[in-house]
Length: 517
Image (cartoon, rainbow, N blue to C red; front, side, top):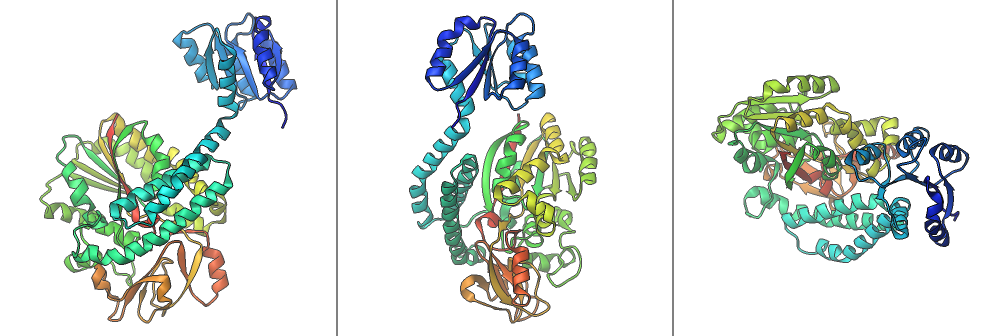
């Protein structure tokens, strides 16, 4: 490997010979100059890995030299060295995007530490993260294979997400593959856990059940409605827990998280079922029976979620919550911008609900548009695209405004999505629904070992399209494919993000309570 090449700029460079000798003995190549103007010529002529720059120099000052360097070479790391501890000088240097800041007199070890921190940071972070995951691999594996309850599964999923995000910084592809294998094993065992417990959760045979879509608002939201400050609930459609974690740092500029919790989406993990359950406080079959005018069936034409505001009003009434509420659904950029302008009018309400429908559109667009597939080729890229959208969206403006106005905030979702890879063959008649992660209909043909089958949909509070209808759900990262035109179907949908079935990503989803800073 080539030596790291350093440029040291200081008007008293001759006095720094011991430092330079020390670095050369450590294997670094050091060029020197005593003025800013010459340093700019040297940077133009040679490729440097890092620059040490004196802040106080006659002629072109260190700050002026820094600005000119950054104009031409914005990625070049610069360490500012100064005698002054004045805050304004420090702020000016930091504002010019320096990599480090040292106060004279500096000793050789300080210089060496700065070099390693800047030039070796990525490798050091990668090595440390890899070592930490290796240490947790066995304990986490033992926990996954244990007899876990719903809270323990939520903890396991949080830990897996944490390592997934941490290991993005690692350059070790092998350790990432090990994590992926551990996550796949967890997905397999989690699916079995849901198969064994989901019906009991809904039948009342056990009190040890998680917060589910239809109980979420009763248990978590309604107790918050007595606060004097306005409360905003933002539901970002199809937001996975890992996507929440990558936008969290941006949101924390305006808010602090006081409760980072996971709840469980009902099945099927799609908007029609899960979100209607949230806003009604009822399971789908109960909605159909109690409010038939607000329910559009699986086999019926029309929008499946057009009465969420009405269902929410009815739920508030049932629980005796006499509050002033607004409901806004954001389906495109224009509506988002209009909502930003109308926020002052909402501050007098007790509860303001905003449904933001971008992430769901992103997952669908990734399936249907080649350019989005390329932009979000894998999980890290998919998360990165989520961050990029959020940073430039009206939603960020909304959250910043609410933070300034000291409004309380809840961020949640209706379900997540999973990246599918393995096709599962299914046969059904022409009335079978089109979702890739669950199917309902009569005379469905499939391998029972590959799916979670519910022969009597009423057991899980789902309606029957006809007397012999059943539901089947994909598990892990499977997706349904019809034998006709099988290869085309598989190639088109493989490696897309889908929802409707049983996976940690679809079912274990965020409910985040935040307070303004």
